[in-house]
Length: 135
Image (cartoon, rainbow, N blue to C red; front, side):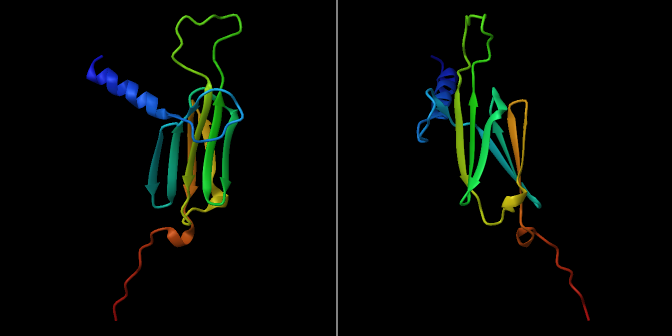
């Protein structure tokens, strides 16, 4: 096995997690996430391929943001897979939110398998320019 292929396999294995208690059978995956910050807040991008909006749950309790989604096999009932690289299963990820997030204003969108969460900052946490007067 080449070193590059070996690293790819190791990275894929790291995505499978078992820390969350599940009520569904099957594997639990940790989706890759990017988090960005700007002056107005934070943006979280999570890859959730195969997850439909009705199977996605974003929950906020006691300062913990939870992303949980379930994906089913995408082939039709009459189709028989020849090669399968995509497994059905559950995606699960949790984040502790800072007090700087306006929790009542969080916006979530799922487009083409990518979840985009916008976490706006509270006014007190936003950077502001202070005007300096001279006498």
